[in-house]
Image (cartoon, rainbow, N blue to C red; front, top):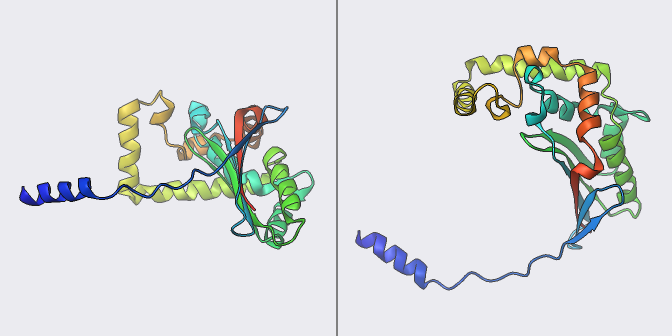
Amino acid sequence: MKAIIVTLALLIAAPAATAYPVPKVERLELANGLTVMLREDHAIPLVTIQYLGRAGSILDAKDKAGTALLAARILTGGTPGRSEEEIVEKTERLGATLSASAGKENFSLKGSVTTIDADSLEKYLELFTDVLFNPIFPQKVFVRERNRILAQLQGLVDDRSALAGRAFYKWVYGNAHPYGRSSSGTPRSIKRITRDDLLDFHADYVLPDNAVIAVAGD
């Protein structure tokens, strides 16, 4: 008990933490409804960008759980003007990164690019928006990534921790509630998903007026 009292006394007597200035963030509302958050930071020649949309696995059809996850996996798989290989090549040539993900209530594309070359940021922004708003979800990429998810789900059979987590959420929320279903779906639900389902998901939810883009850096 004495040790607890002494510790509390020391914490209370400790000087307050140093106050740091809050970074200035500029908020813009574009004509298409997109909210853009900007923060300048010239410490290093790097810009980080993230699109965060109000979408995710809670919007998956009950019998097609895993749709949002699969859409995120294949978002960088190709556009009308670029193949998956060309997207990877240009990203690497710019010294950039680019990746998509989906959670329960969000759908995200994020990445960063060095700004040592004057035109790198402009080229990266063009690539970023093309991938984000013009994916074609090529059939060969769709099949490959669906098979990968199926293999990962098969691997969960021996993962007691993962199985316990799934069972817990199902017990808390029930089968009928989106939170009761796993974002990665089940082998049965994944097999039901088609390429058209991904196109529909993207058309319905990956929209400028349903998201925020945050840009920070040089």
